[in-house]
Amino acid sequence: MRGAKSIGSFRVSLGQGVGNLVYIVAYEDGSAAEAAEKKLANNSEYQALLKQTEPLIASMTTAVLHPLPDSALR
Image (cartoon, rainbow, N blue to C red; front, side, top):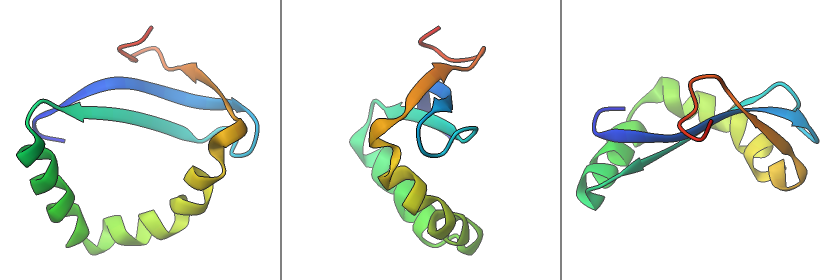
């Protein structure tokens, strides 16, 4: 994502959604984050993916995450 800084990237190793990837990004500028969000809201491919992943995201409250090799948190 243009203008985004990677905070961390993880693979779920325990709990619901084992094997799924989680990426956390941040923007320094709130307006850049809003612009990126609006762009994704109009992207039909992203919206289809979101419908598949939203239930997994909502259920990850009891997951163990292991940082991926490229994670900024490693």
